[in-house]
Image (cartoon, rainbow, N blue to C red; front, side, top):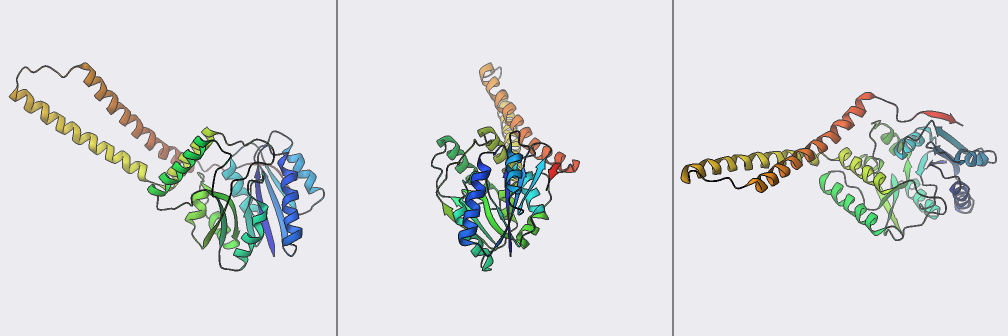
Length: 309
């Protein structure tokens, strides 16, 4: 029985040895009867990440890597790892140890028993993170779960253990614009989530800045909800109805009270700015969907490999 562990990495030279040591300790103490396979997916690192991986590989033949030609993003790295994993069961973990390896035995036991097809994790709290970032995260889950039929567990992490059947289902979704948290839920199967307290990084600095997370959340909403397009349609209809009502009012007023002066330029400017804002917002929302279609029809590869072993 083999467990493949997928580890996307980007400039994580300091975290890699610490991660490997923590996971191998769990393996030797609690999962010695399970064959492990490590797939480090180097997403275009500019430090000595690949050297740290090769150093592990020189002492452990179960360590493998794929190195991208440039940074293609974590979603591409996850998909690549799933393609290369050969295990009966597949785990996805972050290298910074914010995904506690200590949970791995219980997660694996849940899928091996056949009771669950996926055992994932979610954070109960976001202690240690900026409050504004935690607030936007909560807002994202509320928006996506109210606008989509695809329910994503609040605080869900990519850290999970899956059966081969689930992995194959995910790989069958070869779309270019990927949002793994949504895809993991969309494929269905029996899923369970283990809650844990937020953990701090063991080393290095996160590459996820606020703007990256904001863009990622927009991608998630666009990928799994058509509600923004419905809102645009409603705004257009409401604006049209208001214009018709306004035209009728002006016509009747001109008949009843001839030679009436205009309301004044400030009110006209406010109306014009309001309508212009609605139009630009609507164009922006529609543009998001069109841009995703544009990228899909190009049929570009999700990633390009520079080296692998």
